[in-house]
Amino acid sequence: MHKPDLPGTLLFQPACILTLPHSAEVSDFLSVNGNGVGGGSNSVKTALGEYFERRHFYREVTSRRSGRLSEFLSEREVLGFARAFVQTASKKMSISDIEKHEFALSEVIRSSDFSKCFIPTACISLSSHSLGEDSLLYPLRDTCGCSFHWNPNIAFLGAIKEYLERQFLVRFWLTKKCCSRISTVETGELLKGQSVRQLYKALAASGEITFLDISDTRFPGFCVLVVYGQKNINHYVKYCAGMAYASELAVAMQKSLLELWQTFRFMNLFKATDSEEKMLEDSYIRYFLGCNVYETYQEITDVVECGGCRSLQDFTVSEFLFVLRRMDVAGYFYSKIGGVDGGGGVFVKFISPDLFLHMNNSRNFNSINKYSKGFKSSILQSRLEKMVPFP
Image: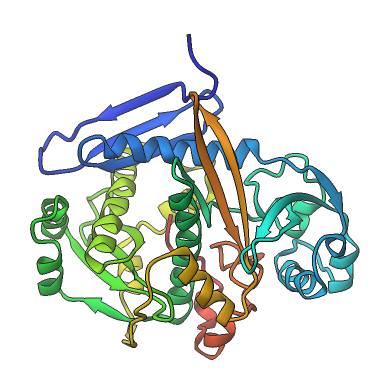
């Protein structure tokens, strides 16, 4: 008999060519899906993790109380959310309007001192169900900062790491500035002996592939964006992208390439089967398919390399939070332990109104915040009007 806390379908697709990654897909009857690629059982683990994460944040986040932000947050914190919401709102609002608004609220902990407080549920849940007018203040949501793992330490690290890599991506897109374009020679050295090397060689032989280091050097680790381009109009995939943030450059490159391959496979099959884009529920994927032209690859690889001194801090939650405190950024962790087939998985989301709240920089977007203040003069208006081409 099917267990209600497990997905209904698991589809494992071993690669026909042994040197390429396997693929796995899991789903349930309510159309929550998870996908993963990798060697051995890693594809299944990744797909299950993505499924549980999405299911929780789409369906299981609840509001326990309601009220004004000032009832649960300091004056400074209220102002932070108000300044963000007047930018994201789908109708004209003032800071005073936000301060008077009655929000559906969920319990979180402050990243500064781990004290408990309440923030709008709309900043956590991916669904607008039962949120009423809160969705007018924050209409666009994505999985930015969401994480799931059996180990709570890894879940918290995954949440803040995932949130920050999206900040770095938006900053790169808005300014065209990156640390460096990783050369073909360096790429070959860094991927030598790695399981993804053959995948890299296959993609490079088929089209063009570029690795970009888009890290913010104030933070530890390396954030890598990899993009694929194809001039041949007869190919189904003309542009694709993947991204990862890790403690080592080689690891970030490997993970970003696997993410690119996951999206590449989907796009190739989608086009090969003459599927209709309007049938896709995910607005980000619909938009990304619309970017599937070689010109997108040319645009995103037209960069300004800035270099920068690399942070020597450890790749840990405490070090990330140290940098954010130094930037005077207020953040919050939502966390919940959920039962999965008799075990306890940990769901975590990191949120900060002082950073970009979501990835669609083209509308309902808090472009003015404490993070963007540092590169405000470098933001290109043409880029601000066009969403970053990333799934």
